[in-house]
Amino acid sequence: MIAILDLIALGIVALIAVNIWKGFNGGARRVSQNDRGPVIDGRAEEATAPAARAAALLREFENTRAELKGRYPATFAMLGGYLNSHTLAEHGGLEGAVGEMLADWAPRRDEAMRELTKILAENETEDEVRAIVSAACDADFSQEGYRAWLTWLLGRFNAY
Image (tube, rainbow, N blue to C red; front, side, top):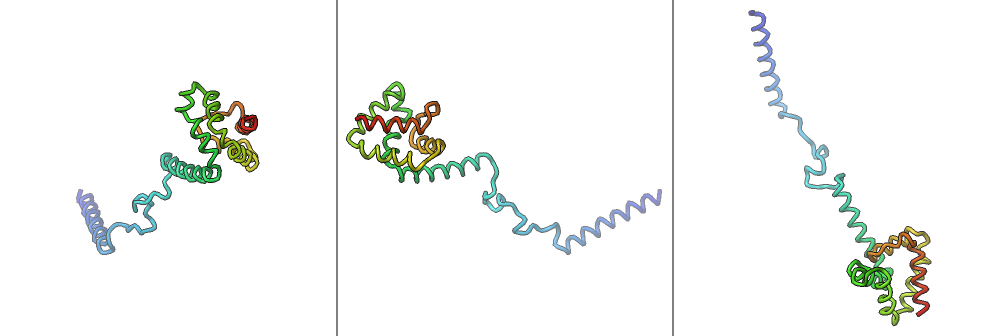
């Protein structure tokens, strides 16, 4: 029994010695500036949450959309003004909205045709044209094909 009490006392003395030693050495392990993650410092540079990735992609999309709008201003004005969800609903669908767009843009037909030709010439793939049209308006031309639809629209302006 005395041997057990001696072992317990020895354990207590060892714990006290370790605590005193830690006190002289500065306590617990210190975290250096580089060991801290970006969230501790109030930064979220390496955030991997889905919302953070979506926000970054949305910012990138808005910047790219602004670049495209600067490069093709007439197309963005034309498609965005007439092929938005409000105008499509007001005219009962795509045909009515396109008809009004063609009539209203008849005085600026040459400008519209030049820009549509520029889009088709500069963007060779369906995905590139789809990205431009999708950034400009709410209409979906996935069944017809975006290049085919812009070619059709170019032909409609040419017929005016």
